[in-house]
Amino acid sequence: MATYLEDYAEGETYEFGRYAFTEQNIIAFAREFDPQAFHVDPQAAAAGPFGGLVASGFHTLSAMMRLLVDHFISPEASLGSPGMGEIRWLAPVRPGDVLGARLTVTERRLSRSRPDRGALVQFIEMVNQDGTVVMTAVGTGFYRRRPRED
Amino acid sequence: MATYLEDYAEGETYEFGRYAFTEQNIIAFAREFDPQAFHVDPQAAAAGPFGGLVASGFHTLSAMMRLLVDHFISPEASLGSPGMGEIRWLAPVRPGDVLGARLTVTERRLSRSRPDRGALVQFIEMVNQDGTVVMTAVGTGFYRRRPRED
Image (cartoon, rainbow over all chains, first blue to last red; front, side, top):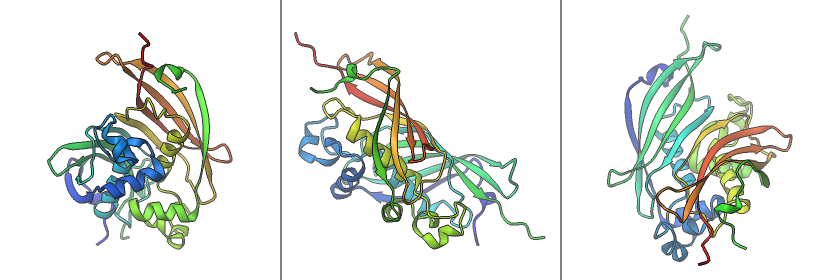
C-alpha cells in the first residue's frame, strides 16, 4: 500500500539504513565536490586538522539523503523539499565508519492553500557504529495526502 | 601569499565560479545519493511535480561547495566547518543550467578559546544563467589567523 502524509506520525522516531564510508568513496566524492586536502589526500590529512582522512560534510549529508530515499521517503507521495536547516557536523566521519539514520517527525502539518498535500518537519541524526552522533539536521519534506475515495 | 582569516572582510560580497548541470551529471549524482524519480528518470520526471528532470538539492549544495573550494576557501587556513543552516531550495535546477556563487561575509569573529583561529559566517546564493537565485544557505567556516611574526 502506498504511503501518504497521514502515514507518518508526529512524535514518532524511525531508525533505518546503513551507509559505509571507505577511503575510496570518501576520496571519490571529495575529488568531485570538496577537494580539500583532509578529504582527498590521506598523507596530507594525517598532518592536518583532523589527524587523518575525513569525509566531506556534504558526503555525509548526501549519504543521509540516500538512506531517507531508500527507507523513509514515499515515492508515491514525495513532492520534494523547500529546505533544510541546522546542519551540525559534530564528529569526524572516517574510512570504516558505518552510519545509520535516526529520524524523528517533529511536526506534521497540512497545507493551507493546497488541500492535497502537507509537510513533515524531521529532526535527523546520523549515528556511527559506536553510537556517536556525527551529524544532525532539520529537514522539511512535502508529501501528498491520501487521495479521498469519493 | 597565503590567505588567512584577516584577509576576508566582513560585509564584503564575492562572486565566483561556474558549475554546469547536465542530464548526465544530474542523474549520476542522484543515482548515488537521491534516486527519486524526478532526479533520475527523465520520462517519469516529465509527469512529476517539477514537469521535468531536476537536480537533487544535495547536488546543488555539493556544487556550491565545489565552487567555494575552488575560489574562496583558503587551503592554508581552512579548518573545516561546524555546520550550515537555512538552506532554501528556491527554484528547480535543470539540465543546461549553469550556476555561479555569490557569497557575503556576514560576520568575522575570533575564537575566544583558541587565539590562532576564528570563524566566518557566510550567506551564500547560487544564481543561474538568468540571474535567478535557485538556492541560498548560511555557512560557517573555521580559519586560521595569520601567523604572528615575533
